[in-house]
Length: 392
Ligand code: MG
Image (cartoon, rainbow, N blue to C red; front, side, top):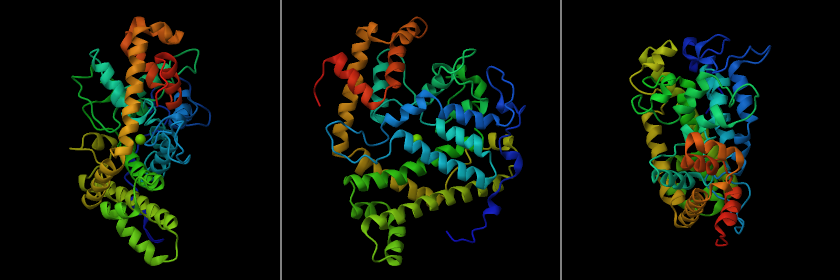
């Protein structure tokens, strides 16, 4: 984009931003707390999430690449933590450009993947299958809500992190909408209305972050070749051609990096323009207008959406579901399944605080909660210990 891009024209009507004022309804906490002398409600939420134990564990959880002890793969691939920080950067920048509440966007981005089990989506799938055999399901949004409202132990006077209603609503509505009839326990989260734009935007910031990062890590790993990416991702090819014309002497790696940051910038800029256009077309002036709109408003333009969908399709077929990755996924699923079965058979192996939970939550949910909290390396060690497994 050019230096003369009219950023000020992106700002949305002020009433659309979530109010962070002390008494605003979305700043309410389950346990009332006095306001901090100089920190805002959502700024405090972002800090509470950043300082939580579940947040630190993201460093040891798979985003796409699982660092296995026997593999010699590079140590600079994204983890769930660095992915989260990239989403946070995009969300904060985008919220500030649109005049939305950047501190709320930051808190929502920091928390958006906190409910992920070890081994990325393979781990989530396996855990869900284990629970289904007991009439339950695993859902990382609902697990994230359990972490922040219950599992985190930071305050003697209350459970969890005591986050504001806006952050808890954003956790519940990350990338999906729950029906009020199926989830009466979530009634306080306005299930029949759309979330504020700060929350809607996180889904796109997430997509933009992982799409560009996974092309980067996929190329770096050698699983994807430059020719494949150029052929399969037109958005990448267009920018790559321009970069090679501009810097004909640049190394392959530098040309890829120049291309990827242009792709990221183009996706974010398109998102900002598209949100702005949607709000204008709708005539929305208040948060309630956003909540009652006919559909979610945070979308890309139709042309960019086609590019995004194409890139995602490419990543699924050539990276996430590639033969090399499938072997790793199968092993991850085996580890989760076997450990789940072993702990169900011998609950005395659960730590004491989880054993207490069995009486109220049942054994299957308790075991799943324990496994979901593990990092990749911790679950591997537990599997070897519990299942006597030495297989690789
Ligand atoms: Mg994510």
